[in-house]
Image (cartoon, rainbow, N blue to C red; front, side, top):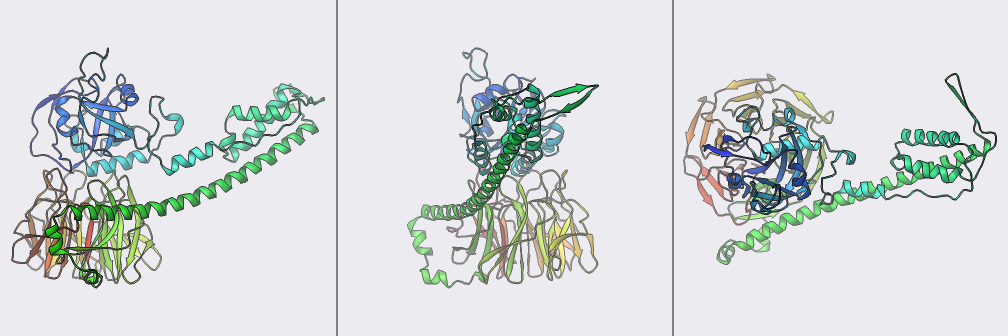
Length: 629
């Protein structure tokens, strides 16, 4: 959802060898760049994959240089109008990795010097243009040409759309390189392919070709009915059946075909042989079941290990950031272990998940702004960002979000008393960039998106029946909205409806069970923050359709009007915000620069914004925040 304020007219080419067209760039910085689409055609796609190299003309170097290893990439084939992926960068984007790429004789200089080495993240069925055009619609500047730079929201939606159609091995073109990263699914598939059939030495001869065919057909039917992949190939069946029947000439076996009807007779010895094969097939099925159970156990252990590794990575990142600060600052802010231990987490801001610029987080941290101290609590069961967090009684509920490659429908809660996470009923739809609110003892999940659509849907967690139920939808679709509960009423503000960025607001009164439009904000905002301080609502920062903003406006429901107040010091969106004491704290986020915002700003009613010292948190965006006040 990032953009640029200007579009310089430049004539560009791509590796597709199509006619050049005048177009500008989105000018997304490194922190705002979520992914990149490269171009090709039927004549260049083979070289892209055989060399594991993508390239664009020189003018594109401005943003290709912002590509970091691990950044999601896609390849658009202008010949068949399909989008291939999912790939990721294996190097930094740079000039002339292969100075002679995509040339006819290998002697001319390449026309596509803005290059990056790639590897395959996931083999997916190519997306038709009608499928992905809705996701990157704002990038189109003609009916058939579009800008290649993707923001984080577009990238997440494309990954979600593509990963829903994982390609089968037989459908992958031969020019694709082998997958370079190990995944549990690949390990399981390889293990199953390496399972060997038990071999029996049976002295038998084949009486007639028709009898062998009958046995083969019977085994094929049994194999396919039982979905047993090892016996799925004709070669393995013929080998097994031939070894079983070879050497046993069965006199009297006759295949008669009369008047289009087939009458077959199989001798007693053939029945015995077939029974033996059936028993062995059952043994193989038992072996497969045992292997499946073992694989499930290993997957469970792997998931647990990944959670622990992620927690250790989070801790290492925090320690690395802290060590980069000067010794003088560290000495000024250092607390002895007993002081840190006795800090009450209920007097802190809870930070949930997010992204550091290199790592997607599963962490739960307790942040004390006045001490510049952060305490790590038990991490979530999964990596999570673009989520929403609410508090109910003595627990935090984290709703849906994304794991860096796809949207989630899972919900988990954290108990402060027991210091443990509990899985709760999942939402009805996978979604991210949603909002959450609590009214009484009810938890609400509002809006968001699933990679294809923006939602107006609202779900409510019914603890009596143990599941989420659909309740009255909002009047508008809202992706990357913000919402709060205020005096028993839910207010939803801003967001993106799939076409434009919104300044509209609406409220839901559970007693009336209906949504009603209220006075609109002065500015359009999405991915902004919304909090309540001293009976007033504050909308801060966000993206207005052109850039991240620093503006702040406040709504006093009694006056029914949004009024501008002192802007923040930094433009930012996708930040975390919470009220602690008599102050609002805004933490991190994504700015208009190339890096993630690493500052924390504080505001008191009637005062000015000022930065508080921050050596504990470091860089973080796409996270959620909440306090127990």
